Image 1 (cartoon, rainbow, N blue to C red):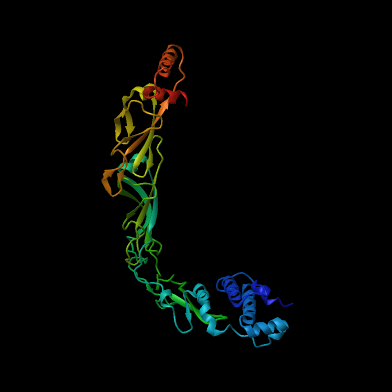
Image 2: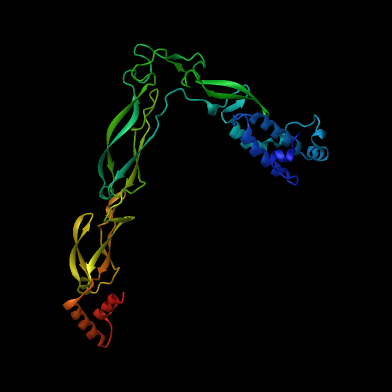
Length: 374
């Protein structure tokens, strides 16, 4: 039993011409035989085309609506050629690398001369201080290098590659394909020479005819001061070697900075927290704190409040690309309030009573009240 054309395209009978066209283009991409290799895709594609041929033009659609498939007879043809501009994306997705019979697509030609080697990626973990100050790191990579035995030709020493008899040295083969849109020629890499245009009769025993060998290599790379997670460094020429005397690719080193137990980074500033006693907060003090530059003096002002942030200037992270400019080290103050008892409690209670009896609640009294009311 013949299927309803509207059902085939997945549209309603009230759909306008543009909706039908969009549905056809979507299904045509999905079921075109050069894209979909599943069993039945070819028949499904023909069915989709028949449906669109009937519904794409008002006259044929009206005839189908009145008489069904029987009313189409042998008059249904391919979509109106004047409307083919609307199918540019279908041709683009189906036939990139194809050309009309008798001609080739110049962009589909495979290069048979020198080719650049592939770029490589290496992920490198850094400790916090290594990212701050930079320095040299040694890494080990595996990449392809030109075979020293055959100098990259792939042929056994004393022999030479010869022109491929399948493609005539062009590196490409063509096959004709008939589609509902006409006859097309598909251009693909030659299966005999893999697109190189040359055949190697006696392969180099060292590289197996590839002209390249996998080599593990140690490299020293310079880490600039101030890098952070996600920074990418490029090491020129340390990717895979090119073929036929082509240039080597590059090595890209992606940096990942490990978290530190004490220091936290905020842009080019460094953040830390320290705890001081309530007496240090009340009376002030001079202490030493840890920084990325070692121990440094820090003055705790008299009457320091909880969560006060003190700044050590120019002890943060160097600015990437300008290591002379540095951020600051920001220190959040946390006050350690102990449970007091005995003589210490009595002294504090007497002090608090005395302060409460005063005229106001400024200075130390206000600070003590803030602490004991927390």
